[in-house]
Image (cartoon, rainbow, N blue to C red; front, side, top):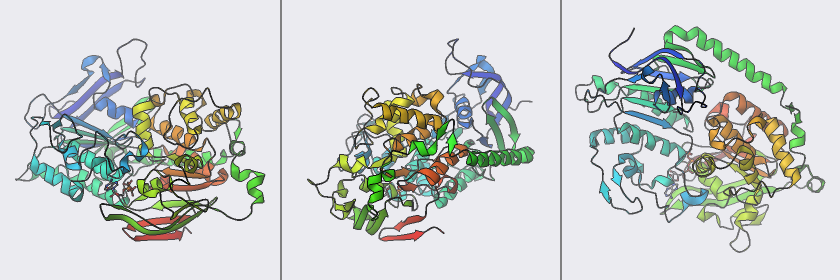
Length: 542
Ligand SMILES: Nc1ncnc2c1ncn2[C@@H]1O[C@H](COP(=O)(O)OP(=O)(O)OP(=O)(O)O)[C@@H](O)[C@H]1O
């Protein structure tokens, strides 16, 4: 049965990224029949959700060619249906990690309003528009989006300076301003604090309500979100499409599948618990062997019984143009301690990590002590500070995907983590590393089930595996301090569990982790919660 009110229709279709014969189909199994109608709200759920969103978003070729068709736009009834597809794999890629915090902006930077309007042509490095495109912009809609997505106060901010959560909201506004007929968002709640997550969920729920209103000033129709098995499915989703490695397993009105959804969740939780048993020994590799050369395991360190602070902050603050992000922070991180750095989007968590890594211009300050030694220009240097630190974050992920992910294989990328003192250095050094380091890389790859993919280019991996590679890269020097900024967001639950158990049971070093979702948060004894400006709490998790 078919409906003329459809946005996209798929019938007996296979998909490919190229028509070249040797290219495999995206899913081995044909998609029988799937139809998304205007106004419906779908969740694409399961391990292959991203591939399915790409199919809906016209990123793959359909075989036969007419097995996927798009309907008419509700905007003007024309055949030019507009699709906007958003994925939050990373933030805006910058030239290097510290670029966000620099006073002299990257040449591509622009303010948040200009970014959302997205109609300037030419250079973004000047404050005025060289030329604007003739795309008609619905300013009433602009104001609606800015208010609903809580961007009002951020309009004049430089885009590059926006926090992850702020940037995600800005990207959503930019897409919606184009009044798409089909909005596809992969992991819409990734990296959002609980309050912002609710705001976005309610916003997506209400996207259509405006259409029933006599004063309607925009037309959006269908929304499709991609979620992992562990994510709660919003109650406003009207339809579900469950996709596993082979393809679509079931799809249709969500109420028809309540039992199946529950069954899949229960099986998934059972499989997670099975991982717990294998954490000490996986694929022939013992977890203890992976970290045996860590400094904290050495006799030198064991002899020195005095507990050292990996770093300490004494009354530290960061300000932009006189406006404080945070002030008066006093914080000691002892060797081997684990910290969850908490706080709503924009409270300064990433900025605090940038300060520890000396990426922030305001971090050259004797109120910051590394291993008890006050940091001073001329006395401390960036490379020595970072030689003790391992780091993974969405910014780093964005830089790698854009500039190195097509050039470096998994092994090569992990090896770049062995460069002395710079998380930013991605020069291929595989030929220069010593045998013991090479064996360590192989052992990590085996332990984390990536050995078969060791020679594949980074960008060819799934998001989960890309994150896993960056996580291994952060540990490969066996650093004293691991900074894991949303390092597990977007990963499948099974892999997160293995990483967490490894850290919890075996990693000897200090850890500071940032994450908003409970299932992505490593169990830590301590937390530092940023509230706003001068307010923060340090406490113990019971
Ligand atoms: N160059 C800058 N100028 C002005 N404000 C800035 C600049 N860089 C960052 N900010 C602001 O500093 C605040 C802290 O940003 P930060 O990225 O540290 O937040 P966060 O707590 O990590 O947020 P999220 O949870 O969204 O990742 C934000 O409000 C951000 O907009």
